Amino acid sequence: MPILLPETLPAAAALRAEGIRVLAPGERPARTLEIGLVNLMPDKPTTETQLGRLLGAAPQVTRLSLYRPEGEASRRTPAAHLDHYETIEDAAAAALDALIITGAPVEQKPFSAVRYWPALAALYDHARERALPTLNICWAAMAALHHFRGVAKRGLARKAFGVFDQRVLEPSHPLMQGIAKSFPLPVSRHADVPRKMIEDAGVSVLAADSESGASVAHDAGNGATLLFDHFEYDAETLLAEFLRDRQAALPTAPPSGLALGSAGAVPWRPVAHLLFRNWLTEVERGAAARRPRDLLDWLLASDAPMPADNTLVAVGSAGPELFAGVAAAAAALGMPVASMRHQVVDGTHAVAVALRGEVAEATIERFTKRVVETDGVHRVLHRAAGHHGSALVAQPTGRAA
Image 1 (spheres, rainbow, N blue to C red):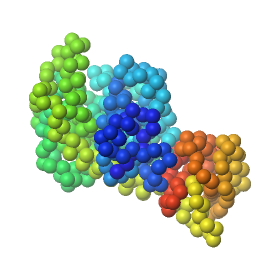
Image 2 (image 1 turned 180 degrees about the vertical axis):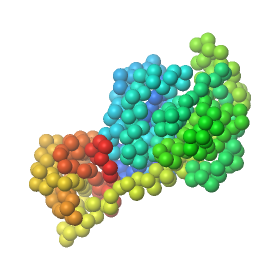
Image 3 (image 1 turned 30 degrees about the vertical axis):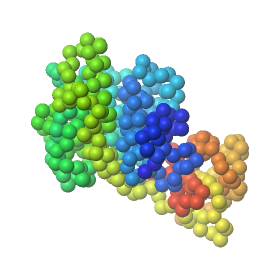
């Protein structure tokens, strides 16, 4: 199935070359899962491609929005590339269905010593309040476990590094559906959390290896999926890490379980596809439960014909003020308004704006950001031409859907 990425992101071209359908901005379907990627990795373009590959192969249609720590710079990511990113704080204000938080090269630091820890901790709190699922990878899995459950990580005397055979411990769990009893998986970390400590904290360990420890866990109470290892890695990632460590004079042994002369094999890729598909299925269920009944359906249920082009709906508690605010936002942006309607159902006000012709997605985003800041607005929805469902595209920070 397709994925939506910023059109100028290098990952878009790379995934198209692999046969994954990357939609253009104007092709956004009405029912799209909005996934926020908090990318803490130094080589951001590679991580975007790796995770976009797994999301783009799933049956759900997803749109990936990118976030990073404020003020971050990296020698392995061009400065211009960071223009594709907003900050971690911006993620809390976005209308997202789930978050993916990557690993980071800070495993040997205390969490409190990580520069962006306060922002990440606040985002975790926001996700829990909004019941947004989080998928946490490597260091982020330890971070989520520490934040939600107070469990400490421990440093390893020797880096856990290589491909290890993981054993499925809970085959009936939704995240493990269709996954074989054992599977190979890349491991690359300087720290871990013992399995017993994870389970004693009330978190389910779904897969583990006797040597490398817990690999997949799920914190149902906090909606956090914890991937201590790297389902997203490419065939050459471990080898590249090994060579980089050697160049930096780090005492890293060659990756265990990986024949360096045949690094083109990716035996963990089918399992990675299954896991991400299973996770997105759970995200989809949660998103459907959080979303209100389709306000566009009743708003457009009058005798008037359905507009042929994009329709945006602002929903809130205000009456005339809501209509005036929406009209002012549309006029300020020069949007081609065909008609506007105000309707009240069960005390809830909604203003629908039918747009004539094609409108750039960036303009729609500017409109929704402006409208959602208006007092009394609860949410903004969007229906694309030819669709019969709406997608939640903006919502004030901290307000439940």
